[in-house]
Length: 202
DNA sequence: CTCGTTCTCTACGATTAAAC
DNA sequence: GTTTAATCGTAGAGAACGAG
Image (tube, rainbow, N blue to C red; front, side):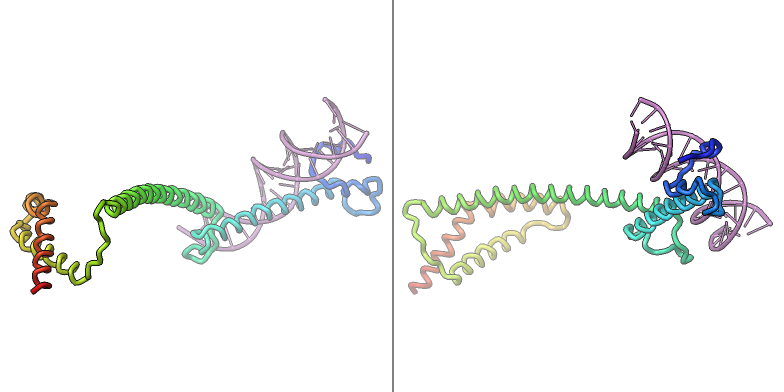
């Protein structure tokens, strides 16, 4: 491979084949310099095509870039880049939000599992109490008990003032204290059960 | 390691087309 | 008519890489 000294001044891009016929100018009408220039032009074109392809792919990927602008013209490269940046930032925000939501739900699941375990233990303890016998209580009796309790609560609640929130919350607290005590509710239940038994006998 | 070759990037001027 | 953005061809610098 022999080249003129002046050729080195360009320090340019060329595939090996360009130099193949260097010693025989009759094969090509183009000078060495011209051939180098053409090859470089081609390479540059190829590079620009790759960049263009990259912009096109980006535009296809980003939903906000998929439509052309109002006038119907293709979005500028700067716009494609800016919209892509905006979209990536939006996705990052979404991801963060979803992660927070997921963590919240996980905590909720843990709390609910603890509650479930507690309730299961309560049920288990009640079932294993000495003297406990499983007796079937009819839906009719259950409904009477429920109805009686609710009637009584409703009657007593009617004394609570609901004219504004302050009075309502104050009223609710004293109402709970007075009418929703376990002992009171227990008495109510016994009362209705007794009445039910009397009716059955009579 | 040096040298030659190839690849990649930047810069610049010219041109074109759309927007203002 | 001017401005702006995109595209093209060209030149040159430097990194990357393989051969010797």
